[in-house]
Amino acid sequence: MKSLSAECFCIAIRARKEGRPLFPLNPEDRFDFHRVKVPRGKWGADPFLFEKDGQAYLFAELFNLFTGKGALYVRSIGNEHAKWKRCNIEKCHLSFPNVFMQGGETLMMPETSELRQVNVYQATKFPERWMKCETRLANVNAVDSVVLFESGSIASYVRNSRQDASLTAFDSNGTQLWSLQDKDKKLRPAGNPFFDGGLAYFIGQNCQSSYGEGLCVYLLDQTKGIQGMAIREIGSEGLDYLTPRSHSIGIHTYNKSEHYEVIDIKFRKFSLLRILGKPFRVLFRTRRTR
Image 1: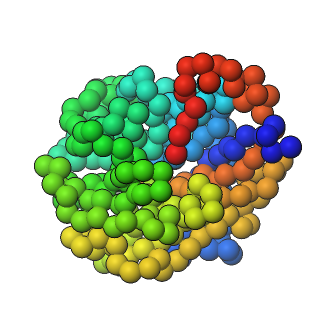
Image 2: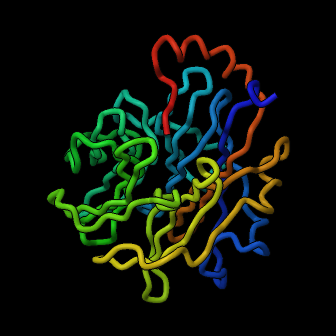
């Protein structure tokens, strides 16, 4: 029964190769990802990659099925025995650990919508210890913020109500640059924008029928925003090998670094922890909202 199952995500990674097509996950090019293990009682989503001093790192939200809260964790890539370490940031629900370099500093801009802020954190002991250094937006219900290249501007998914949301860009001073209302529910960021062949691309989540059902690729102008309709839509077909005990029902993140690509896949599974934790979640009002 659906009421006894939980919506879950898993993370999968692969090495980048020369000659791969520009757009991720072409149907003929989906079979060399491998699933990343996470601790029991948790699922992993919102994967981001960061390479520093010759070592690659995977940052992600690990979601506790019992408490219904997510926290940010990191592990190194290249060692199958590497352990996840919890990032010391905030005590609220955290997700979307967007790590980037700016001005020679290693920074993170995670989702902290529970605080009604978009904050930037600086690494004090990379990769697990971070300290808040800036509040980019305050008194706003904004999630999943991405950096728009080297300009210092950001794009955040701003929710005015359950049915009214927009992808809005702000400069480094918090001044609005442009805003697009998300009428079709396809503009929530699904990873960092990227360049290829002199063009910039934005990846959004397709949430028309359900949260995280697919990806949408758009052309992106750094000053004017997204240009036109999606030029490519990507579903989870062909990824069931990553969820062997369940059928994949969505894909909602894509990121890449110099040497790796990473995705997350949505599926459902029976979860006793979810059932046992329901009174706890109701009591402490920690049920996750999207």
